[in-house]
Every structure is written in structure tokens, then in C-alpha cells.
Image: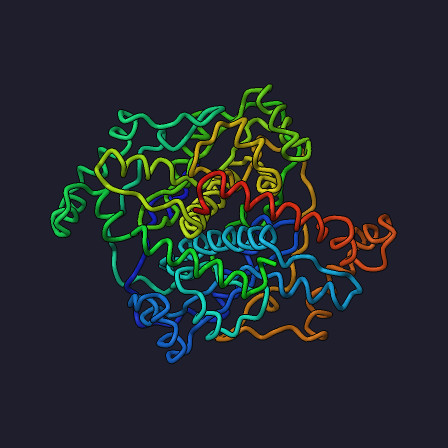
Length: 249
Length: 249
């Protein structure tokens, strides 16, 4: 196998040099990323680029004020977009029927394939990126700030810049535990012990458990980082926003 | 900018040589693809590999019998998976709270980033892939055939093999129409005319309009390919399946 070092050795970058990523480079990277597979070649996405300092400051609270938002050269909000396509249908005497959940998932899938393609291309060009997972946690102020119309929904945010750090690569689960042949083989306790042994053995994760006063690493996730009540609260909000954006008719 | 030819010049491959993609190569490609960004490093995905001929034949109807399914060396079904993580929580005295919509979107996002990374790596290694968009159209028989448990949802299917065709590259919309600076600039009729002019001018698309007895290309999409009533019917089914798989508690 031919390895791609910029994929194999990649790590998310959260600290950036005080150096602008040129608009032309961003445009070229995006253009090439748009070669990703897309549902019926409809290209159901749009990208909003935030470079203005004040706009970054206004965007930050929606992402829990993670410092990458204001420190990055640019913040890219990738959106599932059925607005452009539907408007084109309307001016061409065609009746669009894309104000529904399936169409949202189709558009979100299109957008996420482009996100990953963009990240690969950016990293191959010496840039650092961080995937900001908070976009769907609190989408309403993002929608308002970026002026996203009906049938446009923000789905992923990427910060980008020239790296000012060389962090350690994070661990991954052993690959064989994530692949299933022919049918899904559900996990026994032994499987799970084997799957998570390395992760649980890492000093940083042991420290994480201790620091949070927990007994197990899993408890750090369920009790501190990704809590049931938060997930349920944000799920309701997310469905409400999808309805407001016209994707749950 | 350093271009990546295997991205820039890529095209989906629907015809494959009668030649097996070795299991080890698939595993290596998947392992490297798992370097994609993942929510809290939880790796909320699983991949089911279908190589068995009978299993491919059984899978085909769920994908409208597209010939790629049975002709490909392997079919990969990428799933949003909160089952493994939740089961690990349970055996570690932690109470998982991931049976909700936000968690589904988080897991689906994780899975889709991996899908694109995998496709890039496969193509860089001379393989051809086709993204099969029908996975979420009719997920129930896929879930049954692949024996996917609660909190596992198929989200994308990729066929893979050694290419036996060299199709033309498909068109893309002009990049500047998909990028917005600072705020989303909604599309005027002039914008849309400019955005879709090249696509509408292509002989294959003109033929497509004529062949289907339509007046405009947009009508081919709304009246033939992606119809409102189909989308609404499948949206209902998809939400029902998400509930059945435990993601809409």
C-alpha cells in the first residue's frame, strides 16, 4: 500500500501562526475538494468563510469560546444547502421537493465528504486544521450571524491556519475491532476489554480519570464530557432548528 | 498549491475488473482512514465488509439493484455506531446517554469523514470506488442482513475494486458560487443563471432533458430522479428506522 503521510501522520492543530492563509489558496483547496462524490452531482453544500476579526469574535460563543475560532486565520462553516438547488428549480419551472429529512441527510452527507476532502488537501499543503464539533450543538446563533436562509443548515466547522504547534498524535482503537466481515459481530466483554485496553492504559487518560475524580475513563465521557442530559437537551434544539430551516416538513 | 492528482482527476468507477482487493489492503486502507478527525476521539463508526457473493446478491435490492454492488470486489457499509462505545461504558460502571438525535448526527459525521478519507486512500492506491447514495433510502433490509444492533445505523455504502473503465470526469458548478465570504449571499436569478449555465449547456444534460421529455434539466431532477413524494415517503421511513435503532429516544 502507498501511504499518504499527510493522512497517516496527521494531527489536529489548535495553535496557529499569525499568518494569513491567502484567499486564492482557500478557493483552490475548496475547488479541488469539491471533486468529492456528491448525490446526483447536485453539490448540496455551501461554505461560509469567516476571516473578519469581529465576525470570528461573534462566532466564538457558539463554539463554547474555543480559542481556535479567534486564533485561526480563517473559520470555514460547511453547510448542507438545498436552497441554491431549490431556487434553481423554481426559476426553471420545476417544483423542488427537498424540504424534508432525507434531503437534509443527503445534503449533510455531501457537505461532510467535502469537509474531509478539504482537510486532506489543506494538510497536504502544510496547513493545520481543527474540526470543531460544536456546530450542531447550538446552531441558531451561527445561522443568524452567517445569515443562512431556509434549507441551509451549518453542519461542520473547520479552523485553518499555518501550524504553530506539533502536538502528539492521538491514539486510535485497534483497527480489527472496527471492521466486521459479512455481518456485524456484537461486542462481548472480552472484545471490549481488548478494544479499549490501549486507550485506558495511556498515562494521559489515567490522569484524565484522576483529575476528574472518576473511577473509569468511560465515566469521564458520560459524567463530564458528553452527558446524557446535555445530549438530550441539544437533540431537541437540533430538531427544532432543522424544522425552522425547513428540513422537517 | 500542491495538487493531489488522485483527488483532482478522480471519477467514480462503476465497472470493475474480476480481481479481488486483498483483505490486508482493505484493512490497511481503513486503518489509515481512521486517522480522520473524530468527536472526542470516540471513533463512532463501524465498517461492515461484504465480499461473499451471496451476501452481495442479497444486499443489491436495498440499493435498487445497481450493478456495482454485485460486480465490485467488495462492498463497504459504513455505519454510525454508538453501540460499541455505549457497551464499553456499561461494563465500566458508566451510564451512556447516546440514544438520541444529536448522538446520531455526531456518529454519522464521524463515519462520513472516514468514508471520504477511505475513498481518497483507495484512489491514491489505484483502486476505483463508487459512493452508493441509496443506503438511507431503504435501510431496514440492510440492517437486517448485516445484523446491525441498536445504536448502529448504516449511513454510506462504497463499492470498491480495480477499475475496468475510464469514464469522463463529471462537471462541477463554478467554485465561486459555492463560497460565501463572511455571510451567506442568497442567490438572485442572475446568480443562478450563471451558476448553472455550464451544466445546462452540456450535451449529455441536454440529451437527458430530451430523453425524459422535459423542458428543463431541473425538471429531470424534480420529476424523474429525486421526486418530492419519494423524498417524503423515504424521510418518514428514515425517521422510523432511526427510532427503531434507538437514536430518537
